[in-house]
Picture 1: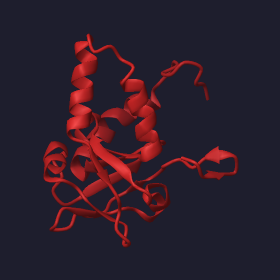
Picture 2 (picture 1 turned 120 degrees about the horizontal axis):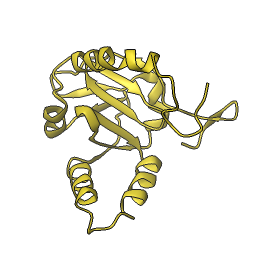
Picture 3 (picture 1 turned 120 degrees about the vertical axis):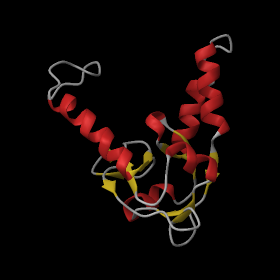
Picture 4 (picture 1 turned 180 degrees about the vertical axis):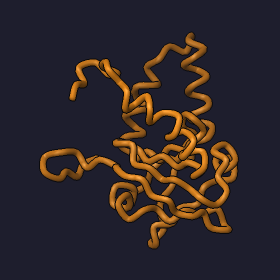
Length: 154
């Protein structure tokens, strides 16, 4: 992500609740459009959400994954699941993007969505699934007493 604001990378942040239209299209939240305007890769994410990865982030991620040994079953499995569902996308002039049926099914997307900024990527969730996930994990987040990530302290 090349644009910066105040010396910080232009991170993808926030939660939005758009609707999926009858044609399986999503209107991207305005806050994400600049970073995704030149294209992105949409693919399966963890916890049955979808990832929208700006092209530079997808290339960085792919470079890391492709360094894993082909002898590693876990690496092969991860690469297959990630890449077999991947679709390179370009939003239209209204900021709409079609979500392929395979990915809609994977994420259980019907009509109500949660579209969240997760730093270097956007995640698309079924709204009810997002609310359940958040209810399960917010408590443990609030109660964290030790480092989750090395050298991350508040």
